[in-house]
Amino acid sequence: MSTDSHPPDTPFLDRAHEAALTRLTQAGDDALTLSRVDQTILAVSSAQGVIDNGGFQDFFESDWPNTPPYSFFSDAYRRIGAQGPAACIDEAAALFPFDNPEQHDEERREFLGSLPETHALFELGDRVRGDTSVWGLLERYAKEHSGH
Image 1 (tube, rainbow, N blue to C red):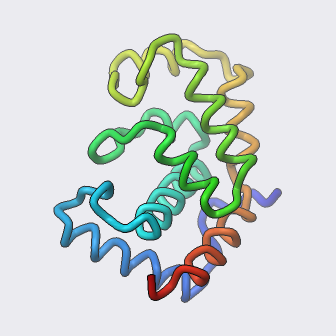
Image 2 (image 1 turned 135 degrees about the horizontal axis):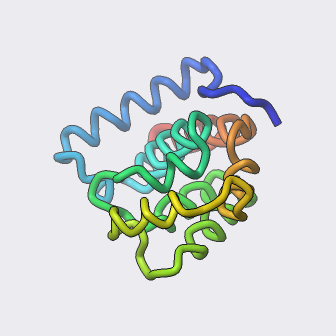
């Protein structure tokens, strides 16, 4: 597993991401109104970029626009074929001692701040952080669904 902190420089994926961002802006920044393909491209590229840079600590501390459930991200990973990272997100989200952690900023951050670096949540994040196969799978997905 590579420790690159950013996606590979792939012009096709860059164009697909920019096009999805344009459509997101046109939709008033509500990703849930976009096509499944655009949702997937934006969810995976955003999440993986954050995870590559700061692990699950940063991913779970982030306040994602419109507060989607964490399954929004894991489902997107599954759609591109990244089953392992999707399972890690689901397992980590289930470790929060309260329901719907994405909706509870302060409690979520307190919980994350109380955990030792060796906690299972961070170990799960280490499996996803720097996993460059995610970027390859996302590019393949974007190519397979271009024009949809």
